[in-house]
Length: 423
Image 1 (cartoon, rainbow, N blue to C red):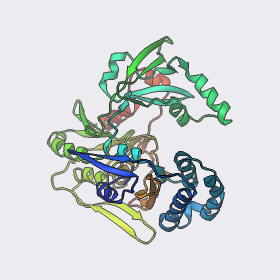
Image 2: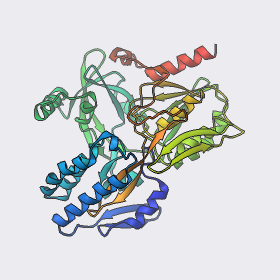
Image 3: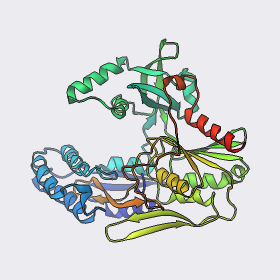
Image 4: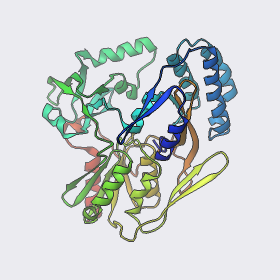
Protein backbone atom coordinates (compact mmCIF):
# COMPACT_ATOMS: atom_id res chain seq x y z
CA UNK A 1 0.00 0.00 0.00
CA UNK A 2 1.46 3.28 -1.07
CA UNK A 3 2.28 5.45 1.94
CA UNK A 4 0.09 3.24 4.12
CA UNK A 5 2.23 3.55 7.23
CA UNK A 6 5.49 5.44 6.94
CA UNK A 7 8.48 5.38 9.22
CA UNK A 8 8.02 9.10 9.85
CA UNK A 9 4.34 8.61 10.64
CA UNK A 10 5.25 5.86 13.06
CA UNK A 11 6.84 8.31 15.45
CA UNK A 12 3.96 10.76 15.04
CA UNK A 13 1.55 8.00 15.98
CA UNK A 14 3.53 7.17 19.08
CA UNK A 15 2.89 10.64 20.44
CA UNK A 16 -0.72 10.78 19.29
CA UNK A 17 -1.86 7.62 21.05
CA UNK A 18 -4.94 8.11 23.14
CA UNK A 19 -5.44 6.99 26.70
CA UNK A 20 -6.69 3.67 25.35
CA UNK A 21 -3.26 2.64 24.05
CA UNK A 22 0.19 2.16 25.53
CA UNK A 23 3.53 1.91 23.71
CA UNK A 24 5.91 -0.73 25.01
CA UNK A 25 9.48 -0.91 23.72
CA UNK A 26 11.44 -4.14 24.15
CA UNK A 27 14.88 -3.72 22.59
CA UNK A 28 14.28 -2.91 18.93
CA UNK A 29 10.68 -4.11 19.05
CA UNK A 30 7.85 -1.68 19.62
CA UNK A 31 4.40 -2.94 20.58
CA UNK A 32 1.22 -0.91 20.74
CA UNK A 33 -1.12 -2.37 23.34
CA UNK A 34 -4.77 -1.54 23.90
CA UNK A 35 -5.97 -0.65 27.36
CA UNK A 36 -9.59 -1.36 28.23
CA UNK A 37 -11.99 1.33 27.04
CA UNK A 38 -13.95 3.31 29.54
CA UNK A 39 -17.75 3.03 29.30
CA UNK A 40 -19.03 2.55 25.77
CA UNK A 41 -21.87 5.04 25.53
CA UNK A 42 -23.73 7.36 23.19
CA UNK A 43 -21.23 10.17 23.75
CA UNK A 44 -18.32 7.99 22.64
CA UNK A 45 -20.28 6.77 19.60
CA UNK A 46 -21.21 10.25 18.43
CA UNK A 47 -17.79 11.73 19.12
CA UNK A 48 -16.15 9.00 17.02
CA UNK A 49 -18.75 9.24 14.26
CA UNK A 50 -18.41 13.04 14.06
CA UNK A 51 -14.61 12.86 13.99
CA UNK A 52 -14.59 10.34 11.14
CA UNK A 53 -17.13 12.23 9.06
CA UNK A 54 -15.62 15.68 9.67
CA UNK A 55 -12.05 14.51 9.05
CA UNK A 56 -12.99 13.07 5.68
CA UNK A 57 -15.14 16.12 4.91
CA UNK A 58 -12.23 18.47 5.61
CA UNK A 59 -9.19 16.51 4.43
CA UNK A 60 -10.17 13.78 1.94
CA UNK A 61 -8.16 14.40 -1.23
CA UNK A 62 -11.18 14.70 -3.53
CA UNK A 63 -13.49 17.62 -2.71
CA UNK A 64 -16.12 15.98 -4.93
CA UNK A 65 -15.93 12.79 -2.82
CA UNK A 66 -15.59 10.56 -5.86
CA UNK A 67 -18.95 11.73 -7.11
CA UNK A 68 -20.77 10.72 -3.91
CA UNK A 69 -22.99 12.89 -1.70
CA UNK A 70 -21.01 12.79 1.53
CA UNK A 71 -23.68 14.69 3.50
CA UNK A 72 -26.36 12.23 2.39
CA UNK A 73 -24.06 9.35 3.40
CA UNK A 74 -23.83 10.91 6.87
CA UNK A 75 -27.61 11.07 7.12
CA UNK A 76 -27.86 7.45 5.96
CA UNK A 77 -25.44 6.09 8.58
CA UNK A 78 -26.38 8.21 11.61
CA UNK A 79 -29.35 5.96 12.56
CA UNK A 80 -27.13 2.88 12.19
CA UNK A 81 -24.49 4.43 14.45
CA UNK A 82 -27.14 5.15 17.09
CA UNK A 83 -28.03 1.44 17.15
CA UNK A 84 -24.44 0.26 17.73
CA UNK A 85 -24.06 -1.54 21.04
CA UNK A 86 -20.30 -2.22 21.02
CA UNK A 87 -17.01 -0.84 19.77
CA UNK A 88 -16.79 -3.64 17.20
CA UNK A 89 -20.22 -2.86 15.77
CA UNK A 90 -19.34 0.84 15.68
CA UNK A 91 -16.14 0.17 13.73
CA UNK A 92 -18.05 -2.14 11.37
CA UNK A 93 -20.64 0.54 10.54
CA UNK A 94 -17.96 3.23 10.17
CA UNK A 95 -16.03 1.03 7.76
CA UNK A 96 -19.16 0.55 5.70
CA UNK A 97 -19.68 4.31 5.67
CA UNK A 98 -16.20 5.23 4.45
CA UNK A 99 -16.27 2.41 1.90
CA UNK A 100 -19.18 4.19 0.22
CA UNK A 101 -16.59 6.53 -1.30
CA UNK A 102 -15.22 3.62 -3.31
CA UNK A 103 -11.49 4.37 -3.13
CA UNK A 104 -8.53 2.62 -1.54
CA UNK A 105 -6.66 3.68 1.59
CA UNK A 106 -9.79 4.44 3.60
CA UNK A 107 -10.78 2.43 6.64
CA UNK A 108 -10.99 1.98 10.40
CA UNK A 109 -8.16 -0.05 11.95
CA UNK A 110 -7.87 -1.32 15.50
CA UNK A 111 -4.60 -0.89 17.34
CA UNK A 112 -3.96 -4.62 17.01
CA UNK A 113 -4.16 -4.26 13.24
CA UNK A 114 -1.85 -1.24 13.35
CA UNK A 115 0.68 -3.19 15.39
CA UNK A 116 0.61 -6.05 12.92
CA UNK A 117 1.25 -3.75 9.97
CA UNK A 118 4.08 -1.90 11.73
CA UNK A 119 6.10 -4.79 13.05
CA UNK A 120 4.30 -7.88 11.87
CA UNK A 121 2.32 -10.15 14.10
CA UNK A 122 4.55 -12.45 16.17
CA UNK A 123 1.92 -15.19 15.85
CA UNK A 124 0.56 -14.92 12.31
CA UNK A 125 1.83 -17.58 9.96
CA UNK A 126 1.57 -18.37 6.27
CA UNK A 127 0.57 -21.47 4.39
CA UNK A 128 2.97 -20.60 1.58
CA UNK A 129 0.65 -21.58 -1.28
CA UNK A 130 -0.53 -19.06 -3.86
CA UNK A 131 -3.97 -19.69 -5.33
CA UNK A 132 -5.83 -18.30 -8.31
CA UNK A 133 -9.33 -18.82 -9.69
CA UNK A 134 -9.84 -20.34 -13.13
CA UNK A 135 -13.34 -21.24 -14.35
CA UNK A 136 -14.65 -20.90 -10.76
CA UNK A 137 -12.05 -23.38 -9.49
CA UNK A 138 -9.37 -22.60 -6.89
CA UNK A 139 -6.09 -23.61 -8.48
CA UNK A 140 -2.51 -23.71 -7.12
CA UNK A 141 -0.56 -20.97 -8.90
CA UNK A 142 2.74 -21.17 -7.04
CA UNK A 143 4.55 -21.39 -3.75
CA UNK A 144 5.86 -18.69 -1.45
CA UNK A 145 8.54 -20.90 0.05
CA UNK A 146 10.35 -24.06 -0.98
CA UNK A 147 9.11 -25.97 2.08
CA UNK A 148 5.79 -26.63 0.32
CA UNK A 149 7.48 -28.98 -2.14
CA UNK A 150 7.68 -31.65 0.57
CA UNK A 151 3.89 -31.96 0.54
CA UNK A 152 3.79 -33.15 -3.05
CA UNK A 153 1.52 -30.32 -4.19
CA UNK A 154 1.92 -29.26 -7.80
CA UNK A 155 1.14 -26.07 -9.68
CA UNK A 156 -2.20 -26.55 -11.43
CA UNK A 157 -3.72 -28.83 -8.78
CA UNK A 158 -7.29 -27.95 -7.77
CA UNK A 159 -8.23 -27.34 -4.13
CA UNK A 160 -11.47 -29.23 -3.46
CA UNK A 161 -11.77 -29.33 0.36
CA UNK A 162 -10.53 -27.52 3.49
CA UNK A 163 -10.58 -29.47 6.76
CA UNK A 164 -12.72 -32.09 5.04
CA UNK A 165 -15.38 -29.52 4.08
CA UNK A 166 -16.01 -29.45 0.34
CA UNK A 167 -15.14 -26.11 -1.25
CA UNK A 168 -18.35 -26.23 -3.30
CA UNK A 169 -20.40 -26.54 -0.11
CA UNK A 170 -18.67 -23.47 1.33
CA UNK A 171 -19.56 -21.46 -1.76
CA UNK A 172 -23.15 -22.71 -1.89
CA UNK A 173 -23.61 -21.70 1.75
CA UNK A 174 -22.15 -18.23 1.09
CA UNK A 175 -24.51 -17.65 -1.84
CA UNK A 176 -27.50 -18.85 0.18
CA UNK A 177 -26.74 -16.53 3.12
CA UNK A 178 -25.87 -13.48 1.01
CA UNK A 179 -28.39 -14.12 -1.78
CA UNK A 180 -25.74 -13.28 -4.36
CA UNK A 181 -23.37 -15.14 -6.63
CA UNK A 182 -19.87 -15.47 -5.24
CA UNK A 183 -17.08 -13.71 -7.16
CA UNK A 184 -13.71 -15.24 -7.94
CA UNK A 185 -12.01 -12.96 -5.39
CA UNK A 186 -14.48 -13.99 -2.71
CA UNK A 187 -13.92 -17.68 -3.54
CA UNK A 188 -10.43 -17.57 -2.07
CA UNK A 189 -11.35 -15.23 0.81
CA UNK A 190 -14.26 -17.41 1.93
CA UNK A 191 -11.95 -20.38 2.49
CA UNK A 192 -10.39 -18.52 5.46
CA UNK A 193 -6.90 -19.85 4.82
CA UNK A 194 -5.19 -17.46 7.24
CA UNK A 195 -3.64 -18.95 10.35
CA UNK A 196 -1.10 -18.63 13.13
CA UNK A 197 2.36 -20.19 13.28
CA UNK A 198 2.11 -23.95 13.91
CA UNK A 199 -1.60 -24.04 13.02
CA UNK A 200 -2.55 -26.84 10.66
CA UNK A 201 -5.08 -27.32 7.85
CA UNK A 202 -6.17 -30.48 6.10
CA UNK A 203 -6.31 -29.65 2.39
CA UNK A 204 -7.63 -31.97 -0.31
CA UNK A 205 -6.48 -31.49 -3.88
CA UNK A 206 -7.20 -33.03 -7.27
CA UNK A 207 -4.05 -33.52 -9.38
CA UNK A 208 -3.56 -33.59 -13.15
CA UNK A 209 -4.53 -37.27 -13.22
CA UNK A 210 -7.90 -36.48 -11.57
CA UNK A 211 -6.77 -38.26 -8.39
CA UNK A 212 -7.63 -36.77 -5.01
CA UNK A 213 -5.03 -36.54 -2.27
CA UNK A 214 -4.98 -34.87 1.14
CA UNK A 215 -2.13 -33.16 3.00
CA UNK A 216 -1.75 -31.66 6.45
CA UNK A 217 -0.21 -28.20 6.05
CA UNK A 218 1.60 -26.54 8.94
CA UNK A 219 1.75 -22.76 9.03
CA UNK A 220 5.20 -21.19 9.30
CA UNK A 221 6.56 -17.76 10.11
CA UNK A 222 6.10 -15.12 7.44
CA UNK A 223 9.61 -13.88 6.60
CA UNK A 224 8.54 -11.28 4.03
CA UNK A 225 9.44 -8.29 6.22
CA UNK A 226 12.96 -9.54 7.00
CA UNK A 227 13.59 -11.22 3.65
CA UNK A 228 11.64 -9.29 1.00
CA UNK A 229 14.21 -9.68 -1.76
CA UNK A 230 15.51 -12.85 -3.40
CA UNK A 231 17.56 -13.53 -6.52
CA UNK A 232 17.61 -16.63 -8.69
CA UNK A 233 19.73 -16.96 -11.82
CA UNK A 234 18.09 -18.63 -14.83
CA UNK A 235 21.15 -19.10 -17.04
CA UNK A 236 22.30 -15.49 -17.53
CA UNK A 237 18.99 -13.88 -16.54
CA UNK A 238 18.43 -12.55 -13.00
CA UNK A 239 15.00 -13.35 -11.57
CA UNK A 240 14.45 -10.82 -8.79
CA UNK A 241 11.51 -11.51 -6.48
CA UNK A 242 10.45 -8.45 -4.51
CA UNK A 243 7.69 -9.21 -1.97
CA UNK A 244 7.38 -5.75 -0.38
CA UNK A 245 9.10 -2.36 -0.34
CA UNK A 246 10.92 -1.75 2.94
CA UNK A 247 14.39 -0.80 4.14
CA UNK A 248 15.47 -4.44 4.19
CA UNK A 249 14.81 -4.61 0.44
CA UNK A 250 16.74 -1.38 -0.08
CA UNK A 251 19.80 -2.73 1.74
CA UNK A 252 19.69 -6.11 -0.03
CA UNK A 253 19.41 -4.48 -3.46
CA UNK A 254 22.45 -2.34 -2.72
CA UNK A 255 24.59 -5.32 -1.67
CA UNK A 256 23.37 -7.50 -4.57
CA UNK A 257 23.87 -4.90 -7.29
CA UNK A 258 27.48 -5.83 -8.23
CA UNK A 259 26.24 -9.35 -9.02
CA UNK A 260 23.05 -8.20 -10.71
CA UNK A 261 24.92 -5.78 -12.93
CA UNK A 262 26.53 -8.72 -14.77
CA UNK A 263 23.20 -10.30 -15.78
CA UNK A 264 22.07 -10.15 -19.43
CA UNK A 265 18.53 -9.23 -18.37
CA UNK A 266 16.44 -8.69 -15.25
CA UNK A 267 13.02 -10.10 -14.50
CA UNK A 268 11.56 -8.13 -11.59
CA UNK A 269 8.71 -10.13 -10.09
CA UNK A 270 6.22 -7.79 -8.36
CA UNK A 271 3.34 -10.24 -8.31
CA UNK A 272 1.43 -10.12 -5.01
CA UNK A 273 3.58 -7.20 -3.83
CA UNK A 274 1.15 -4.82 -2.05
CA UNK A 275 3.60 -1.90 -1.89
CA UNK A 276 5.32 -0.51 1.16
CA UNK A 277 7.09 2.54 2.53
CA UNK A 278 7.35 6.04 1.20
CA UNK A 279 9.36 6.45 -2.03
CA UNK A 280 11.20 3.15 -1.65
CA UNK A 281 10.25 2.31 -5.23
CA UNK A 282 12.52 5.20 -6.16
CA UNK A 283 15.60 3.43 -4.83
CA UNK A 284 15.12 0.72 -7.47
CA UNK A 285 14.90 3.30 -10.25
CA UNK A 286 18.26 4.72 -9.18
CA UNK A 287 19.91 1.43 -10.14
CA UNK A 288 18.45 1.28 -13.66
CA UNK A 289 18.86 4.84 -14.94
CA UNK A 290 21.50 7.55 -15.00
CA UNK A 291 18.90 10.25 -15.69
CA UNK A 292 16.62 12.00 -13.30
CA UNK A 293 13.32 10.15 -13.38
CA UNK A 294 9.91 11.51 -12.46
CA UNK A 295 7.90 9.36 -10.07
CA UNK A 296 4.78 11.27 -11.06
CA UNK A 297 2.72 13.57 -8.88
CA UNK A 298 0.78 13.43 -5.63
CA UNK A 299 -2.38 15.50 -5.97
CA UNK A 300 -3.62 16.87 -2.66
CA UNK A 301 -6.55 19.19 -2.04
CA UNK A 302 -4.46 22.33 -1.99
CA UNK A 303 -1.23 21.41 -3.76
CA UNK A 304 0.51 19.09 -6.20
CA UNK A 305 3.77 17.46 -5.19
CA UNK A 306 6.10 16.26 -7.95
CA UNK A 307 8.55 13.48 -7.09
CA UNK A 308 11.91 13.29 -8.85
CA UNK A 309 14.51 10.53 -8.40
CA UNK A 310 18.11 11.13 -9.38
CA UNK A 311 19.79 8.28 -11.24
CA UNK A 312 23.25 6.83 -10.67
CA UNK A 313 26.28 6.94 -12.93
CA UNK A 314 26.84 3.26 -12.13
CA UNK A 315 23.56 1.72 -13.23
CA UNK A 316 22.23 -1.42 -14.92
CA UNK A 317 21.93 -0.93 -18.68
CA UNK A 318 20.36 -4.24 -19.75
CA UNK A 319 16.71 -5.04 -20.53
CA UNK A 320 14.20 -5.15 -17.66
CA UNK A 321 10.95 -7.10 -17.56
CA UNK A 322 8.49 -6.47 -14.74
CA UNK A 323 5.87 -9.06 -13.78
CA UNK A 324 2.60 -7.84 -12.26
CA UNK A 325 -0.78 -9.32 -11.40
CA UNK A 326 -4.07 -8.32 -9.77
CA UNK A 327 -2.41 -8.22 -6.33
CA UNK A 328 0.43 -5.88 -7.35
CA UNK A 329 -0.45 -2.64 -5.59
CA UNK A 330 0.66 0.81 -4.58
CA UNK A 331 4.47 1.22 -4.83
CA UNK A 332 4.58 -1.79 -7.20
CA UNK A 333 2.22 0.01 -9.53
CA UNK A 334 4.11 3.30 -9.31
CA UNK A 335 7.42 1.60 -10.16
CA UNK A 336 5.91 -0.38 -13.04
CA UNK A 337 4.11 2.64 -14.50
CA UNK A 338 7.15 4.94 -14.29
CA UNK A 339 9.52 2.50 -15.98
CA UNK A 340 6.86 1.58 -18.54
CA UNK A 341 6.28 5.21 -19.52
CA UNK A 342 10.03 5.86 -19.64
CA UNK A 343 10.38 2.85 -21.99
CA UNK A 344 12.89 1.41 -19.53
CA UNK A 345 10.92 -1.76 -18.77
CA UNK A 346 8.43 -4.05 -20.44
CA UNK A 347 5.46 -5.00 -18.27
CA UNK A 348 4.21 -8.60 -18.49
CA UNK A 349 1.24 -10.12 -16.68
CA UNK A 350 -2.23 -8.98 -15.69
CA UNK A 351 -3.65 -5.58 -14.84
CA UNK A 352 -2.53 -4.41 -11.38
CA UNK A 353 -4.72 -3.60 -8.37
CA UNK A 354 -5.27 0.13 -8.91
CA UNK A 355 -4.62 1.06 -5.26
CA UNK A 356 -2.17 3.97 -5.20
CA UNK A 357 -3.52 6.74 -2.97
CA UNK A 358 -1.42 8.54 -0.35
CA UNK A 359 -2.77 8.34 3.16
CA UNK A 360 -2.23 9.22 6.79
CA UNK A 361 -3.57 7.89 10.09
CA UNK A 362 -5.86 9.73 12.51
CA UNK A 363 -6.44 8.57 16.09
CA UNK A 364 -10.08 8.06 17.10
CA UNK A 365 -11.70 8.25 20.57
CA UNK A 366 -12.22 4.47 20.61
CA UNK A 367 -8.46 3.85 20.33
CA UNK A 368 -8.79 2.78 16.70
CA UNK A 369 -7.42 4.77 13.79
CA UNK A 370 -8.89 6.18 10.62
CA UNK A 371 -6.79 5.67 7.53
CA UNK A 372 -7.46 8.79 5.49
CA UNK A 373 -6.75 9.02 1.76
CA UNK A 374 -5.11 12.43 1.40
CA UNK A 375 -3.67 12.42 -2.12
CA UNK A 376 -4.26 10.93 -5.55
CA UNK A 377 -1.42 9.69 -7.73
CA UNK A 378 -0.74 10.71 -11.34
CA UNK A 379 1.96 9.09 -13.49
CA UNK A 380 4.64 11.17 -15.24
CA UNK A 381 2.49 11.16 -18.41
CA UNK A 382 -0.61 12.29 -16.53
CA UNK A 383 -2.42 8.97 -16.09
CA UNK A 384 -4.50 8.21 -13.00
CA UNK A 385 -3.95 4.67 -11.67
CA UNK A 386 -6.41 4.60 -8.76
CA UNK A 387 -9.19 2.19 -9.67
CA UNK A 388 -7.56 1.61 -13.05
CA UNK A 389 -4.22 -0.11 -12.49
CA UNK A 390 -1.24 -0.63 -14.77
CA UNK A 391 -1.99 -2.32 -18.07
CA UNK A 392 0.71 -4.82 -19.12
CA UNK A 393 2.49 -4.44 -22.45
CA UNK A 394 2.25 -8.21 -22.85
CA UNK A 395 -0.71 -9.90 -21.15
CA UNK A 396 -0.38 -13.39 -19.69
CA UNK A 397 -3.28 -15.70 -20.46
CA UNK A 398 -3.35 -19.20 -19.07
CA UNK A 399 -5.73 -22.00 -18.17
CA UNK A 400 -5.55 -24.91 -15.76
CA UNK A 401 -3.91 -27.14 -18.36
CA UNK A 402 -1.08 -24.62 -18.74
CA UNK A 403 -0.45 -24.74 -15.02
CA UNK A 404 -0.68 -28.53 -14.93
CA UNK A 405 2.47 -28.61 -17.03
CA UNK A 406 4.25 -27.25 -13.96
CA UNK A 407 5.43 -24.07 -15.62
CA UNK A 408 5.03 -20.52 -14.40
CA UNK A 409 3.30 -18.79 -17.35
CA UNK A 410 4.57 -15.35 -16.31
CA UNK A 411 8.22 -16.35 -16.17
CA UNK A 412 7.88 -18.42 -19.35
CA UNK A 413 6.49 -15.38 -21.18
CA UNK A 414 9.30 -13.18 -19.84
CA UNK A 415 12.03 -15.64 -20.88
CA UNK A 416 10.44 -15.93 -24.33
CA UNK A 417 10.50 -12.15 -24.68
CA UNK A 418 14.15 -11.95 -23.57
CA UNK A 419 15.12 -14.68 -26.01
CA UNK A 420 13.59 -12.75 -28.88
CA UNK A 421 15.21 -9.42 -28.04
CA UNK A 422 18.60 -11.12 -27.66
CA UNK A 423 18.24 -12.64 -31.10
